Amino acid sequence: MEERELIILKKSLKIIGDFAERCDYVNSAHEYVKIHERNIESLHSLASIRGSQYFYDRINKYPKISVEELNEYLKVKRKEVSLIRFIGGLLIDKLFRLLMSRGNTFKFIEKKVQLISKLNNDLILVIENPHYELLDAERKKMNRKYE
Image (cartoon, rainbow, N blue to C red; front, side, top):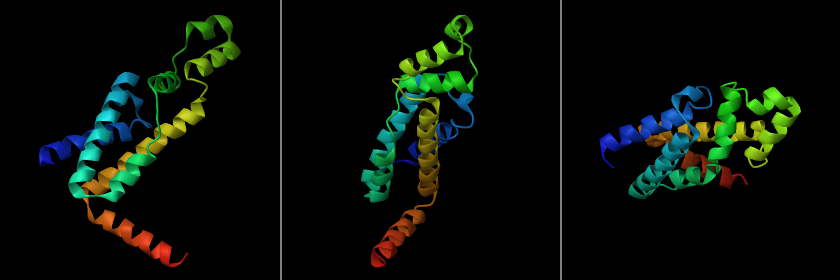
């Protein structure tokens, strides 16, 4: 993987990694999903080039997140008031949001976004400093010795 591609990957991971704190970095849920899927493809490519089990393990830890869930997350974070809430009240709005997000609550969606952010930030660190991958492998070996 070329240096230019690594720089783009790190920037993309950073944008999605900072999304939990600053949702204004991404314009829409569709854009978030598009960037996130491109990041995963790039990470797969990097993992195969480096022969890295660490990257494959981290990629497999990413939760599945849908556009509908992200739309709900953005509405809450941006404090958008829907017409349903204005007319029908808070309870009807919450039920409608629950249906629109496929039955997932805001807290559940928020945990997914935070996990994605944490994984992205960890991967940025390992991309910049590959020796952290070796430290993780050593840590796993030590844990197996004491089991």
